[in-house]
Amino acid sequence: MRRTGWLPLAIEQAAAYIAQVGITPADYQDLLKRYPAVMYAETVEGGDAQRTMARIWHITLDRLVDTPAAGQVLRTLAWYAPVNIPRTLLNGIADEPTVLRAIGRLSAYNMITTHEDQISVHRLVQAVTRTPAVGDRHRAAEDIAAGLTQAVADVADAIVELEYRNPHSWKVYRALAPHVQALTAHTTADSDTVTTALVLLQLGRFLSDQGRLTEAIGYLQRSARSRERVLGTDHPDTLISRSSLASAYRVAGDASRAIPLLEAVLADCGRVLGADHPETVGARSNLAQVYLATGDVRRAIPLFEANLADCERVSGADHPNTLASRNNLAAAYQDAGDASRAIPLHEAVLADRERVLGTDHPDTLISRNNLASACRIAGDASRAISLLEAVLADRERVLGADHPETLTSRNSLASGYRAAGDVGRAIPLYEAARTGRERVLGVDHPHTLISRGDLAGAYQTAGDVGRAISLLEAVLADCERV
Image (cartoon, rainbow, N blue to C red):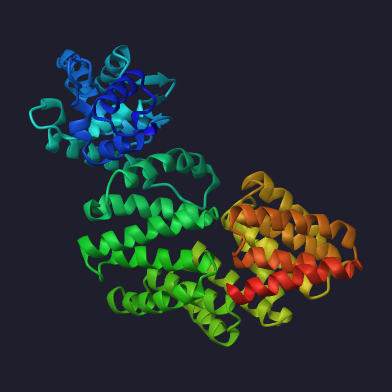
């Protein structure tokens, strides 16, 4: 009876109805899902019409009629997750004293509970509040729609200025994520506004960066579809959502979806926004990264070189986008086996990022990890290990142990130990990287498959040929399948 929220009155109402009409609990839940307004008000023969969820809700709000903001607050809260709602998500309703008074009165009547700066509301109270009812002045369809609009606007205000690559923003993103999930669960894509699409874009980018790719792709797909429907396919905001979706496909290792979408987005951005627009440059960079990931270095390097020249000309040498372009070009040289160009460029990018962004910025940590990997590939194992040990410690401290980039550092350090002949330290790290990637990215993600292959190689180096062959056979089968 999850749809009743385990509320005693709701369970009592459900049990009486089930007994009278002779249906199963599953049948009742189906009715509640399809006809909520009717079922919330339904009574049985001889039952007390005043003791239904809808009636109790109505009577309570009648008593709060002298506090108009109480209804507005409740109709806004109805669209969020039922627990841990930040009070700041009500800021747009009215001035702070008015909102606080409404919260206090709703709490006094047990419609909500409060703890410090967070609010909780029973999921069944939310469901009744979201359900229009003819003749109930507290549940007029237009007022419920206004509550949804307010909820979306308040989330947008909270999320729009956040930078998803900045660890200082992550606590807020994580606090908002359940409430965006609830908003999308309680609505359909055809009702999304441009504000909804913006919220989905912001959260989707964050989740993609955190390795939560299934959720990210779902939000970014919906954002792109909603913007296409409302704004048109050539609107700059639509192009941004399409580009971000393609980037998520790239991060997920889904080249078959990333490449055609990025090629289309790049052409559209160039036509609509111009060759020098940041979104055009970003789409070109993403496309080059997919080419690089699929081993097509010859197509990737010219795109990276063109991007770097454009970024330096348009944005300047120290702009973060320019630094990212230089980093990507260095990585392409590295993948092409050109250490003589890769290492000096990695060193220059690292120095510039430390100066411009700071030593703990996630992009600076990327450059340190990339330089270390280039040193390892070039045969300088001692320098590589020193850099990798430091960057792993810093990523665990700044990003957290399970961030995808921390998992990359763990795998890279294992490779450094293996290159130095210390397979005893390499194997536990490879195992930890594989386990973490399976948990965070999924068993079929390309980075997970890389960790499994690296672990097999380490077992082979250690002389455990049986385990190595078993792992390699499984990895080969999965690579062919994926």
